[in-house]
Length: 504
Image (tube, rainbow, N blue to C red; front, side, top):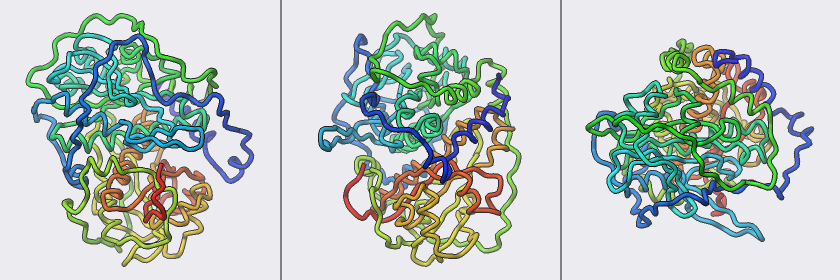
């Protein structure tokens, strides 16, 4: 089948939905003996040590989230700056021992702290770093050398945004090792991998902006060509996104002839369990020809219905300089374990929503809409809201105390009931699939992850907490109907005041 066979996405989405019944009838039990290793390790690869004196950016987080670095800006990139960007995206921030187990926490949020996303870097114009293809190792802050030479031209040939890549000083590649997330979430893990990639991109884009380096997210590319470059199979590990980082004065020279990558990584587990539905979904979303890439890149999304609300609530937002520095925010960030049932300020919620809602520099159009259940925010009536991203305004859908509903919708987790506000990213998947084919399914979840990741950063920069949640799919849509009719929830982010200092 091809990318335009969108029945594949429809079927996958239906069979991976959560419902009250499906969650209770699931026979799945976690097998701790085969829990995957959270790091990809190439024992036979030479490695390069990255600078350890990181000196992370003190740029106010809200400024970094709202900054825009023009794609034509051609400042140089030094190895230290690249290291800071990589660390902020996926670096190891701390570890904690609980009983007999060690837990390693990264810079960006990950569903279940399973970290399925891998980072590769193709360098060509980075000061102090030989041109080559590298794999970033967060465990020891090193990069394993996979291929020598400048591969930007090869990558540009495979992508619709070829000129952005050809002129980039470095290209960051995100892939997903599905088994890491499948171990807990089974086939639904495909969705979670895109969330995780999105939260990493939120950090990466903010870090790049703080360094005054342009960054463009690209998802329209020929998967087989990039799989061959990385030496991945497209089934156990699949492509997710590229990021064109910076701009060089001269386009890249032709790349070397590609040869099979002979380096092997260590096994993640003694045994892996395959989930054919996930493999099929990714296979049907791959772009395998230049024509498919061009079609997706040129796709236009039909205009969504405009809001009919005549009552829009706007609040003053907090000055960017009143937020903590980006480096401090990322080091401190974690997923809140419990919230107090206390109110945050309406200006705080407005600031978080405004800072997290800008569409990223990307080759896909805006695909998601934002809804909220406001449990407790000063100067806001409790109820269900639609957030109009263009107007930066809240539109009330229905008034009422919906703490119980919020707790129920996120799989009856106390976090939803106790939080100050539950943010719900939704999309009209039919519109998305008709425009972008199956590729749009991943793009929509990726965008939700980016927006959710920005909400994390904005909340923590203001001294508040956040955590990502999953949900009962159809019940969530029904709750926000009729406004959300035909839309599917993609990701929930609970915002509020942490009840304790325990974080993950």
